Length: 498
Ligand code: ADP
Ligand code: ZN
Ligand code: MG
Image (cartoon, rainbow, N blue to C red; front, side, top):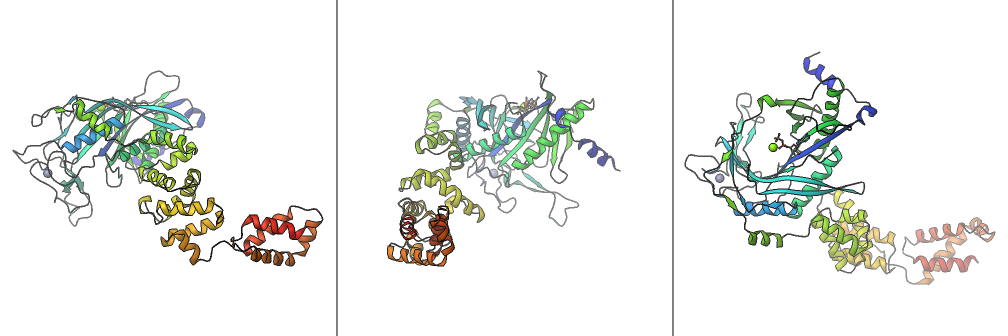
């Protein structure tokens, strides 16, 4: 067995639940989000994703001698927006610093970042788990530029060379550092979910994890529940999906407990999540930790965010997820769960409110959007903004169901056709022959027919078995393809069976 395999076997040891229960995990997240600007942080190059390699570059972002950076005002504005959404103290004065290290993805030999004077400090974000709300502290929010992308695969000469795409170099990011307030992988998951939601609501970032516009590193330690002090933390990198975050944390917590239980000590180090192997692997220990030699960047002026500008940005903020959720719950009389689902994205919330504004009852709008619309959108991979059914068209359908013009069951069939074809409810009802049977004579004819064909059940009913009545109603509704008015059917059957 190779040494690597031996180590895996040790790390994979499962911890008995009673041992696991004696420990608590402590987690803090460092999240990078790409700011949704058109141009880079310190030059006018485009930030567009997917352009041919090295087409969005200039002397500034390539770090050519003599080129000078100028801060993108829009990037600062978005960073302030994020800070306000996270209840941080926006600093009136902040400063950029050089973070020095050598790597091919960094043409200047330093990354422009912020160190002792970040743009914002001290905020919080609320998470809810099993109805319990918890505030997670945010230590700081700072701005920095992204590095280039190293490409090691997909080239004929990949065995000899690595390629570098500088398009991403100099793209503006914010880093949001949480306090070590998270106590379980599920809490970390909930925190990242809510953070992403806030950044999407405020349009600070598109938070596209596949394209790298949202990235997450996790710091994790374990301690005995009886222990007052935190344990030694390990930083886990390469968590570019929500699933990886959860899996990597679960793995790492078990690994650390295993180390402590076997009498060892946890080494402070950086580990990488190996997706294929499903484990974290040591990347560098503290002895090899970088000394970044931070110092203020002399090429950039200190940054000022004056009160008036901060207030202007605050006024431009949309209603945030928490507030919208609370308002939906109160104003529309829907459940907290429904309010949560409907406010998951701003677009979804807007759609719901447009349906209500167009005249549908809030509760049925909430129901139909969740049971009919979201499922179909999900199946067809569409966003709610691309829904083939407009809010007005849905409201029109719901009014017909609410007024009893068509039954709920027919409504669902109409809905399916509307989704398929983009047609209005009235067009679908006409085209599919789903209009209700208003002529009671025809309904009575169907009732008589059903009764004639089921003499045994008629006998049962007349002998006092009232449960059989439902059978007759069901048969008539089926014969009429749901187009008979259930109330008419009830009355007619009662009379005919008496
Ligand atoms: P460093 O100096 O290594 O960067 P920081 O104190 O700045 O460490 O914290 C970095 C991140 O690690 C933060 O998100 C913080 O919440 C988290 N963190 C700090 N101490 C611990 C710990 N003992 N266990 C888990 N996470 C921790
Ligand atoms: Zn540039
Ligand atoms: Mg730190």
